[in-house]
Length: 257
Image (cartoon, rainbow, N blue to C red; front, side):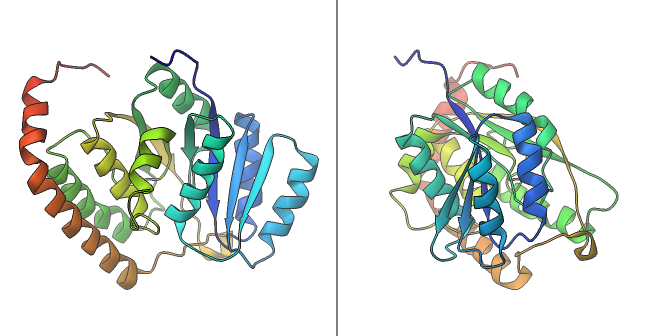
């Protein structure tokens, strides 16, 4: 049994985030000692700014990917490097400033208290949040509940999370999927199937208009089609895992969170 304390870092996948990433990195560093950014083929000048900042900040590291591969691929590259460096857990957060850096310590503390669990942010939306985005995620959450037999995934799409690296690496390195916007929901479903329990914590979400520096690379048609295919794939996996999931449900001891 591994009794070593967890080693945790903040991991920020970043693709053409504009100036928003600078404030995100500053906020993350204010709340955590080790922050890594994976620049996923960015060509907007953000990589150069981040490298210059990292040269002056030993707590910041920037990994450069030569071409854009997608959010999941960037997280995978970061986790592989983190595992080689001896880290055990990563807190993922978006580069655009939507996620609450001030809650990094609380999420990391929850992960230290339950290192075998995934700590999932449950988004708390403000009035500025687009209704289409808020309501649209309910469909993905519904399917995630079916695919995990109600395992307690509070939100399938919110990327402010702490993952244990080892089980997620084992899952991703066996599959060619989970490389783009399908990463967040598929990661929690497959980790749940692997027996990694979810602990949900509320986390505030900030939405920024383009004139405020907000950047979004989500494309409703393309990415909703990607998510639909993902849920069909997961539903097929759920059906043959159903006996195991039922057995786990009826034999598991009650847990309090």
